[in-house]
Image 1 (spheres, rainbow, N blue to C red):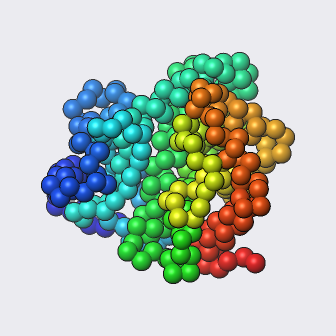
Image 2: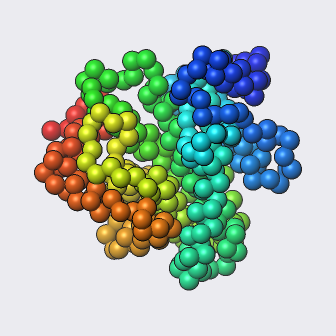
Image 3: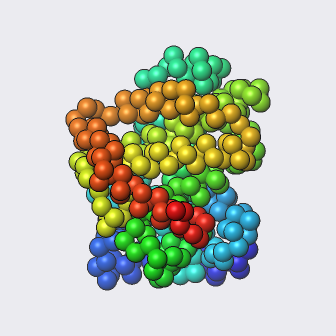
Length: 336
């Protein structure tokens, strides 16, 4: 572990943000300040999630980073002046920061509660027969939070923020979008061991009120897949982009959903030794329907059109370029 800096992370973050505001840097102008979670009641969700996250970050070792040297890491929940739900990562004043906006966390909680209430029979019969609805929602909240924060952490570990990140010269325009999917995959490979064999397993067991190993495995996997789809659908809702090109920062969300399921399936097959019949038996379609059902029809008007474009010849060529970029980041080579 790197030596702890002399400047406390809260002070370092506020100094960093003040300097960015003084310089008028637009990238940070929407962040109005950190939420002082340490002043909230001990059982407040904001405080719990911040303290839980910083406990995880304090225990990051070389196995987790793949040998990449990182500064000490710290999480901050922040206020924003534009209501945008987003997460960021950056390095400043000897610290690496993972930042989530308050609207994103609030959205996670709202959608978690909504998906449980809208699909009560499904949850009570298949996912959490003995669980309290609010506790099931809390697990979905935690999994969404882990999905997003592990993605941001992965940008640091995979050196995506470097001035000259790995494979930049070879990948060119496809670099940014390939990095986003690479961070999704690397983050998933951190999240799943935590919930299946790490400290997240007894936590999930308590929230779902089950101790049966087989039942718990099934419930954790279902909740994780559903949490990922909720997050991607939330980012997709309201967007009107149809066609995509390699110059944009993020790849289309249906493409990220597809890769998310592929990464989870690969982990289950190669690491977790878990069944993967859910990839082909209609389970994913049901989970996507539950996630998509959280949003009003007018917020999904472009979804079918975007999926149709991705299946068109131009869309298939685009997806092929993205796939080559991901192969390069993951293996150092481009598959033929």
